[in-house]
Image (cartoon, rainbow, N blue to C red; front, side, top):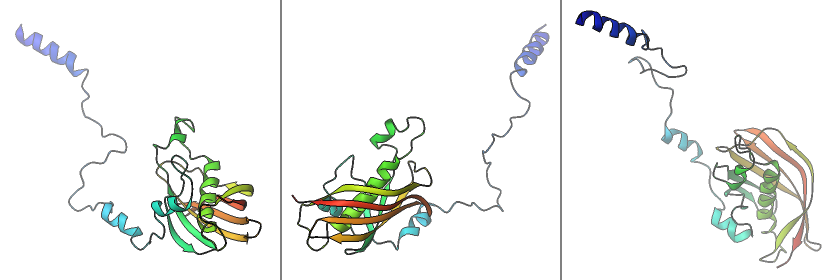
Length: 200
């Protein structure tokens, strides 16, 4: 009798247990001894940028531009040619306030903020030019020829390059062009930005 009960209990419970447990899709098993991992590791990946020099830190930028959180959009400048051009970096993180609404389930760094980041980088160059008084700011006068090529999302690094194409210290006007890249691919391009100098 006991054996019959035990046999029926085992038959019922075995209905809930698969005979073999399938491997999850995408889940890797332990590597065989002769296989090598394709992972490079944090140290090797971090060393890819070891030769990139920071010209202006976030503190240096804050001493030049009036922008502050949450609208300070240049983290560092890594190339700089006085009065002409600069390359800067904006790291996109998920905890930035615009992502609560743009968009809650699919965060995308707004295109207008990409243009603003380029403008701020141009401001770093322009505000250090001869004839510009300390404490001055540049205001947007216009923007033309804007193209967005790919979405920019949290985890991306926006690598931006701007060039001052015209500067008139007497009238306080400047023009610049800019491009921004993610992983070597063009994300945003601005044909021309126009700025007006506002003295403090």
